[in-house]
Image (cartoon, rainbow, N blue to C red; front, side):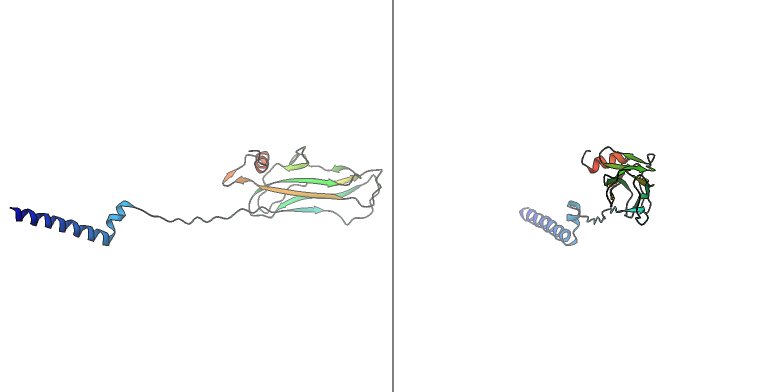
Length: 175
């Protein structure tokens, strides 16, 4: 009886050892205990690039009190839709902007004019203005009108901003 127990114990141990060796070689035991998946995520950063487009005739002497044509719009040459704003600086001899588009552009009272619509890739804004009036008392021989344009992407990742105010607030860290 004692020999029979020894033989059965040895046979059981041998079977267990044999199963362990076969499982280790085939990897089936470890497959039940672990899993591994590798994913390679590739993405690119959107690039928004704008260019100031203007119609401005070769400067000729403009008498004080007269106007000069200067049509300004902004083109989106980037890779993503964007919102655009423009800051203007000019010499003191200019008294007003002519043909100011107040339908599509809004004065933000912060030194910028904001274009209210999303500008798609390859599209251009409407003209911000079409000319400038020279002061009757102008004394400068050179009058400067500088146009500075900025753009911000129209979406935060895949989530579009609700309007131009939301986009610029996010850009400036307000939201």
